[in-house]
Image (cartoon, rainbow, N blue to C red; front, side, top):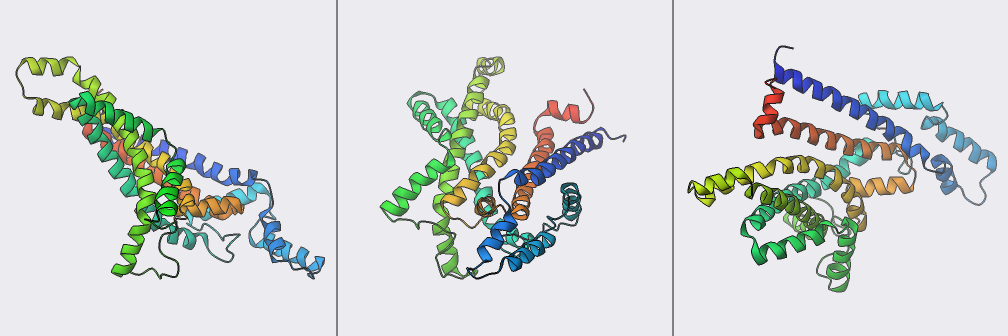
Length: 337
């Protein structure tokens, strides 16, 4: 490949494909380390007091064949890889005969609607707060830094539980859980949208406040470092206005925060698992939590596959965007160094 940028992207893509393969392999083997036989659980749940043991054994054998669990582990693994290439995520154990594709397809929009706004707004507000705090200094900086430090160190589930108890149980300002009111049919009507937003506020706030705290601390530290650098002192001695200097300081301090944006996709995905479970929010996190409790291999694999793809794609896009923001990285991408 003669084009250095294309060669750089190709090399990065190969590493991401390798990372995806490793993640997919772990995605297959780790759920099978969970104690218990999911098929035996299904059969026991279906059994009644008078069910003959022969019928239960026949039912057990039928389900083992249906889910492919009667085959050797390596055969199951290669079947799993083949099905991923066909985007066939299998059939859920606990919601048989429901297809995993359909179950995730219904839950994914809820997670996207919760995750993307929380990640982006937390990143933007946190960076602006951190930069302004470093520039302003004084009491504002002390208060903002203390609050950011507190929120950034609170686990997602703790803040979710506090919000749930105070604002939903104690004062009943918001609903206790769910994505919409019980008995409501999801439609594009204003009544449903307002109801969904009412259920959305607590999960969103519990995630975005933690994100703001973490991003603000990182941006504040980088901005303070840049504000004390030689080029800033030189610019001030030349009489350049602070407003213009701050633009350069903010741009340079933003570079590590771009990487932080990609990392936050992974950390907040993990936080969403617990947050959605606390609020019974109908997203991928709640679905995955239920699947783990029921040892539902196909559903666990499907949910973690979606999370893996989201994190890898986000990191790959940030790798590309980084070159447009930082001239030093762009020089490496173009083979100039």
